[in-house]
Amino acid sequence: MRPSGPDAADGRSAAGVAGGPAAAIAPDDLVAREGMLDGAIQWGEAEGDDALLLHTITLLLAPLRSGAEEVPDPKLTLHSLRLPVSSWAQLEGQTFELGNVVREITADGGTYPIYDAYGSLRLGAAYHDVTPTRLRFGRRDGCSLALHLDGWLRATDTPPSFAPVEFALDADVQIGPVHVVGDSGGDDFPTPGEAAELATRLLDVGAYERAVVEDDCTVLHPRCSA
Figure 1 (cartoon, rainbow, N blue to C red):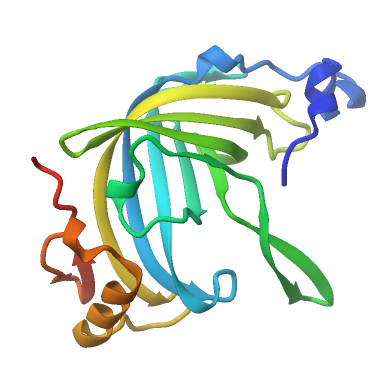
Figure 2: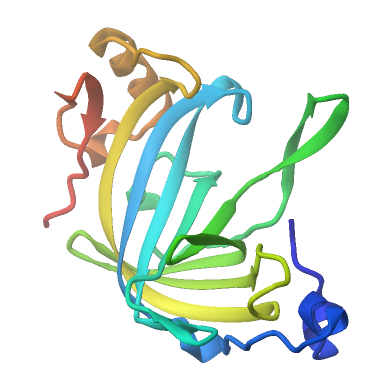
């Protein structure tokens, strides 16, 4: 999952080896315009049998050039973030080192690691791999948290459209709600009663407003206006 440092350090990429240099995306090219932090309580094949609070961070970036084209609306997403907290309020001032294997699953005769975070960068119709290595949350201002993200970006197309790049970016992320999803592979959400039990067990419910049902899913919005 993690791009190899030497691949980036020696100035080569798979495209270069195959017969032509890959385009470059410089670390300073990644600039966040706005962001959102959401949560979900769920379980499933990837998550495991026990319910977990997982977070997703979505960053809308400034226009980014990919090869000869400029993508006006790139989007960087970190999902399945396993952060050892029970509410958004516990993130302020915290730093998390990522890239750890938390469990393994067996599928198609093989064993595969599950990491504590996954990420992608959408450029037009293509999705490229983002490996977050560190999250550092700063001060909160109302319903917004300062965020510093370190990570690696690696192209998924063949040949690669750009060389691997190590990056760091800063963003202000809006604190969003927690959805009680339940079984991520199932067809139905937990009932309001079941969702209330899960929320009481996994969340600091004092940091959230009273649960509401939206599109059949129980949702807890943050209590963060003060």
